[in-house]
Image (cartoon, rainbow, N blue to C red; front, side, top):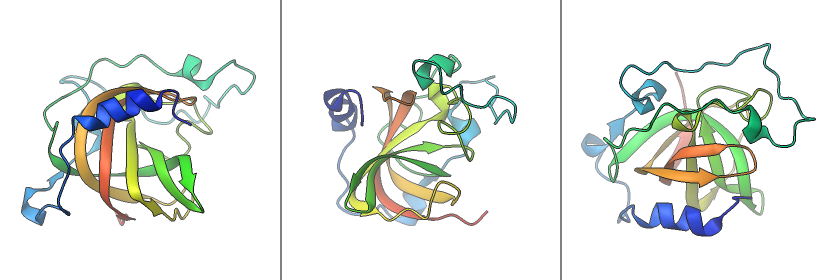
Length: 166
């Protein structure tokens, strides 16, 4: 559950609504390195840094973010990643954290906020599980969102969520 629904709605309110998915040539394909500030280093999974489930909250194990990039605010982007479900409607996921590697926020401490994207979708997504990569396309922007799992630096209003083939 998002700690503050008002914060989420405020973050997403600044993103213009799409009258359907924008033409393919106007979609910006992003990678996780693109979300880092210039000179920033990506944080990969540390196989020895398993989540300390006895800690009060997972956020306490999250590294500090070195800044966010606002280059793509208000643009339609496509970003691959993995789903960490937050909210459901029936069996479909309606809100999730898009993470850069399997197990982030669940089996290993969360990456910094600049490597996490909160995704909302009007059409519930029937997830294939935490290990199935997806590609999410939609309106993108910076945000300051807090969940029970992590602090999140970006938001994406999904128009399309598809299985990702590398």
